[in-house]
Image (cartoon, rainbow, N blue to C red):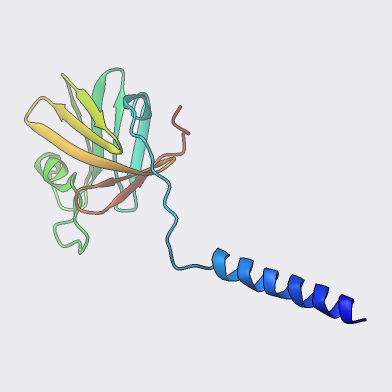
Length: 141
């Protein structure tokens, strides 16, 4: 009986230790590696009705610009120049696209002085320099 109590107590202490270790406050972050292929024939969209992607070698930016929106995106400057009215959905394509990567960062340049930086924060999620997330339904390869 004494041996059984010791065994149960040992199992109890081990369980508590594992629970404490599992619930530690240390965040676990997975590092994502940005690849140019993540953008190839793929569109990333934000909850602000804006999107960016690469189709047939051209950069495609589309969306709605709302000058009164509380959340601003890195695409606002581009979309505001192609929107005729506040709230209009517009699309613009850019040539001479170059995407470079460094660890989890994408730098996208194109005609008309386009220079955008995004960070890969998930398998199908990128974030712009203003903190807005864009998601894609397509799993990058």
